[in-house]
Length: 235
Image (cartoon, rainbow, N blue to C red; front, side, top):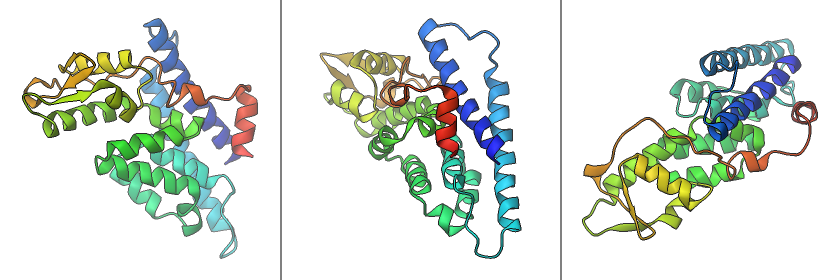
């Protein structure tokens, strides 16, 4: 399990690192295959969770779970945000793991997403440490797209304008420019510091990922080597 945990730290960090590099340089990182990377992450999660189950079976009845299991089970749920299968598997975990602070937070984020409570979702996402943020990062574009689609229906009115600064804070965007680009990419009019939500004008395009996401991911990274970070997470 220890080796698989360290592999996941590297894979989750690498996934965000290559995405960040791609967004900044507007070109695909050489030698990085996103589809292959996702397959490696899923296979490693599956192998690690099997190792946890095997360790539980080998322990005497009532023995404690591995110390880092809760942390990595939470990463599994965040990586598979919105998956009913991942949620069901999480709810079957031993109570000591399921009720840990890490799992409670991951479950709260998952429920906020399923309930379309975007304010709570992004508030909880802001408070996540770096590695859980890397696990969640791939979903941020889809959640923001869904939020704009929901707001376009809920706030749709001829003269209704929503402050752009408030929307940027709600969606945890790094700045107003990012928020403006996101809105316009989805067909929404931004004028005089406000967004005009209209159901008829919303364009349901592919999820758009922010260029930086410093607030939700990059700004949380500690100034240590990856090896030092991995040892800290897995200790």
